[in-house]
Each structure stands twice: as structure tokens, then as C-alpha cells.
Length: 84
Image (cartoon, rainbow, N blue to C red; front, side, top):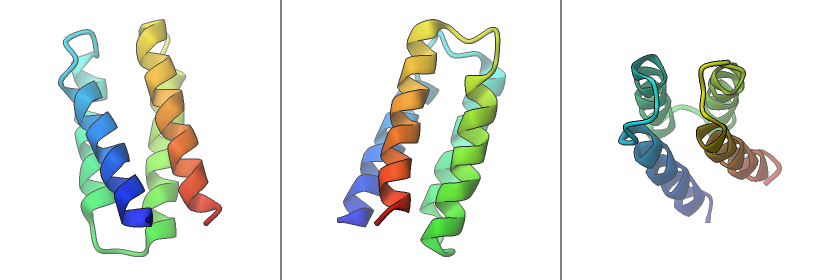
């Protein structure tokens, strides 16, 4: 169940990374987050790291509203994992 959600989140992050409207610096951070989620360390640590990164980039003033909404949706998915 949890691994399925992680794969879903990784897919959502990959879509964002491939979006031409997303700034390059944000794409780099997204790719780092994907690597963190694919790591074998403890799940709660990986989720917290990615949540912190997503919070940071969601505050980017250069971010388009549509992209920010996608990021916040991913944050919501991650938070459901955190409560499991």
C-alpha cells in the first residue's frame, strides 16, 4: 500500500520535472526528491526530507499557480503516508 503511494508520488514528481513551465532549478530539486524517495532509508525520514523540499519550492514567487497546486497535491499525498 505505502510503496504504491510512493510510486504514485514519484510519477507525479516526474511529470512536474518534465513540464516545460517548471523552472530549471525547481526541476533539479524535484529530481533530488525522486532520488530521496527511491532510497532505502527509513520511510518517515525520506517523507520528511521531501516535504521540507516541497515546502521550500512551493514558496518560490516565480512558480506558476498551476505548478504550485500540483506541488501542494503531492504534499497532501506525502502527508497521508506520514500518518500511516
